[in-house]
Image (cartoon, rainbow, N blue to C red; front, side, top):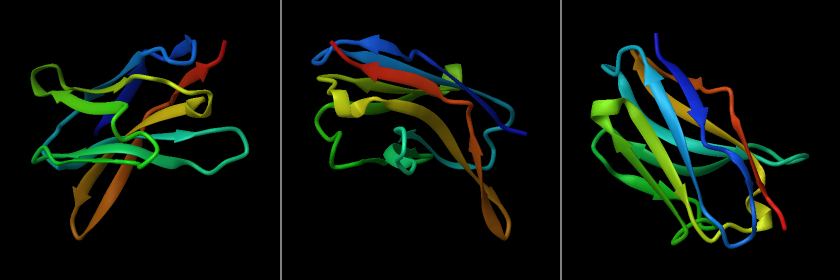
Length: 119
């Protein structure tokens, strides 16, 4: 069973940077992709960035050029480097893993970490 634990959130000023980490435990055998999502108060959860098992990345238009998703397979960890942060980036950030559970897929979520961008 896969479990995800996020860390690295906090309070940062506009223009600042943060790096989020998502530590994975359990078998990676069936992981198809991992990613980061965020949910601001009163809004739906939205995709931020994903990385497939083959290394292909995808970003929301709102974060392209500012955020970078990466992974360290030796540490079973996925990262989200966030630069040039804006107040509208304020949200709870969730780590996600998509598992292939034939004949379908299953989503696993972390507990979330708060990111607040404010002066």
